[in-house]
Image (cartoon, rainbow, N blue to C red; front, side, top):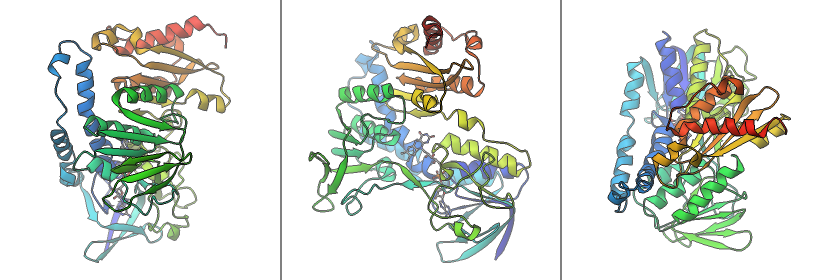
Amino acid sequence: MVDDYDVIVIGAGPGGEVVAGRCADGGLSTAVAERELVGGECSFWGCMPSKTLLRPGDVIAAARRVPGAREAATGEIDAAAALNRRNEITNNWDDKYQAAWLEEHNVDVVRGIARLMGTRMIDVSGENGSTRTLTARKAVVIATGTVPAIPPIEGLREIRTWDNRDVTAAPEVPRRLLVLGGGAIGVEMAQAWRSLGAEEVTLIEASERLLPSEEPFAGVEVENAFQEQGIDVVAGALMIAASRTADDAPVTATLEDGREFVGDEILVAVGRRPRTQDLGLESVGIEPGGFIHVGDDLRVEGVDGEWLYAIGDVNGRALLTHMAKYHARCAADNILGNETYASGESRAIPRIVFTEPQVAAVGLTEKQARKQGMRVRTTKCDLSDVAGALVSGEGIEGSIQLVVDEARQVVIGATFVGPGVGDMLHGATIAIVGEVPISRLRHAVPSFPSLSEVWLKLIENYDAQGRTS
Ligand SMILES: Cc1cc2nc3c(=O)[nH]c(=O)nc-3n(C[C@H](O)[C@H](O)[C@H](O)COP(=O)(O)OP(=O)(O)OC[C@H]3O[C@@H](n4cnc5c(N)ncnc54)[C@H](O)[C@@H]3O)c2cc1C
């Protein structure tokens, strides 16, 4: 059986859903093939359950900073209720609402494993052994995402470990949790499970500090908070072996310097690799296994005919849901004939680590900017400098920094650390994408008494430094 569509999308994660919906809304007949759950990693084993697991600790911390509320927040977090809420948010790992959304937009959902079979042709193998061949008149969009990377550590592949799926879907709180990797997933999950009642949480990170790709002060401030919260951070430490004597026995992580750490579970969170094996990429002349290289139009490089697109995690440009959806909108517009380029992306990728304190950043770090040969100056202030912090609660602090391109006098990077700072990030994204000069930013007046008044402090401090460095 052959089915012809205008557009075929492989993978119905956030990227695939949005590109399919937008193409169909634009009048193109569209099908999306999905091998697991419509909604992808984000809805079921990523953003949504992880943020839900962090939320109770977040709310309690906020209440405990406010005299009056603090007295009402005296008990323990109810882990069972929190896990139940997580189950509701993932709809018990049932994708009926996401699938219904696609159907409402006239997108056909084809269940099964899709493989490219050459130019504009795809085979989808269903669970019952059937194969359906789909052909695309206009475009095929690859949106197959990523899977966890497993580092070559002795014993790690042989023992039972946790990946992002296990850690976000765990039915109960582990007593002792080891976390390998201090990036966004590692720090968020370490804190979530500690706040939900894990007695011992130990995070092992090879770099000297947490969140190594962000500004150095961000990782330091999160580590300080972790110390207060009873999370052990072992930084600058290379793990060389992992072992269990039995499947249900404790796991031992051995470091290069001989130290050993024991847990009941070990989360491996050291990065992601693209889901491009067994996708039939070789049938269109692309080497499988790596990220799929695309241009700013999201079309796959090295494939003639402008029919093949790759969006979201699988193209390796920015492994974040909102960026997958941005790619999806750009790709759909190109397919619909409205030429669009994902240009904003090269200047500003917003990213939020939802720990307590949060780390929210966009654009370049100071180091990245200097590496690109830019003449930059930073301006910094503390969240506690503004009245909004005082009214939000006691002890609210965290560093805020802008990186300014001195040649153009525009902001090119921003990092916010502190409770709830994530919601302030978009102002910085607009300033960076819009290339708003500092001289105009002075006239963007933040409300009193909001945390956004840090913008005034940042500009004041920038002016006070003078144009010296
Ligand atoms: C623990 C965790 C927390 C995260 N938190 C955040 C966050 O707070 N904010 C944020 O922006 N991002 C977050 N992310 C990242 C986010 O989940 C991803 O960036 C996002 O899911 C990427 O979307 P995608 O559509 O590219 O791919 P995916 O969501 O991975 O979806 C790909 C889909 O393709 C399907 N598929 C793959 N191969 C085939 C095939 N051959 N045939 C048919 N279907 C196929 C898969 O089954 C899957 O459904 C988090 C990730 C993790 C792991």
